[in-house]
Length: 322
Ligand code: NAP
Image (cartoon, rainbow, N blue to C red; front, top):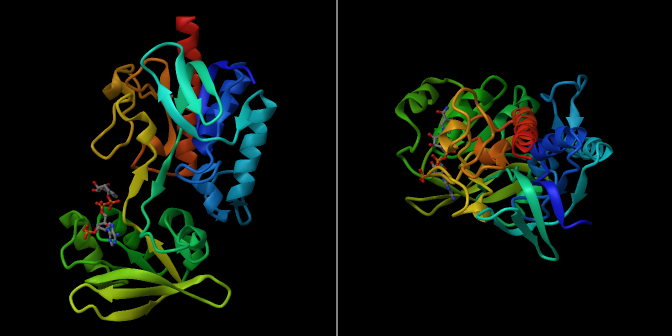
């Protein structure tokens, strides 16, 4: 494996893979450092989901998340990308070529595309991650349709929880479980939830455990009342966690401009072109795509679209700068 590359892509979810497909096809032979543990498995959050029904092109039941990511990697490889399933330990974007360091190697690159994604904040209950897609979910848009005419719990009290609860009422009856009586959510979103007859509130309840069926899927939560300390079981067909997201940006602290929640700033606000949206970060030659810079849409398809943007930005930038 050569040490120097024209492009290194960090992260291998839909954003990183799409960037690698476009950059590979443009002859850039990208090295994709696919990640191993940081923020989840190589392939990103889709590796934790089962059926994806809303990614265009897969009618009649959608496609399995692992299959989709495997196909994206294969397609990028066919165009000359190389995937290494390693974590990046550190980067240095202060001098050129940029340095990207893993446990075993130090690589250099003319350009870097950052697509390290974001992860859903979880409660820290043992084995919680292994329950995702087994009755436990972190995205109503992705998985809500599996609960037609069922009863689900939404855990959280911020705008995400309100949005998820409201969205889920298209399919199911919802109980929103929050640990306090006051909400972090905006008044408008809270009012909309309170007015929705399909949503019930359970307040002052802190989830402490997941209840499991004999087959290991989630059938509710055990919650501790934050006022009385009393434990109770809250049963449901499925559980949606909505207590925030954490962008995987620790690596880039002090190197790339971030907003107050740690998401990378891209486009004109980072010093990129003023006349159109772009994937430019605050360092010229470093581009970002996917959930690491998007806390609004967070969909596989929007991540893939922004990966395409990053590869085109990168290719054009290399063309202009030699
Ligand atoms: P958030 O505002 O940080 O709210 C997180 C919620 O989860 C809070 O209610 C918090 O409870 C609860 N929580 C966190 N950790 C917990 C734990 N360990 N146990 C129990 N509860 C826990 O996160 P968010 O709702 O994802 O929103 C993030 C940002 O995106 C906000 O600025 C929000 O306005 C924005 N957003 C906007 C929209 C929209 O406008 N359409 C939609 C979604 C998100 P406490 O309140 O008790 O701390």
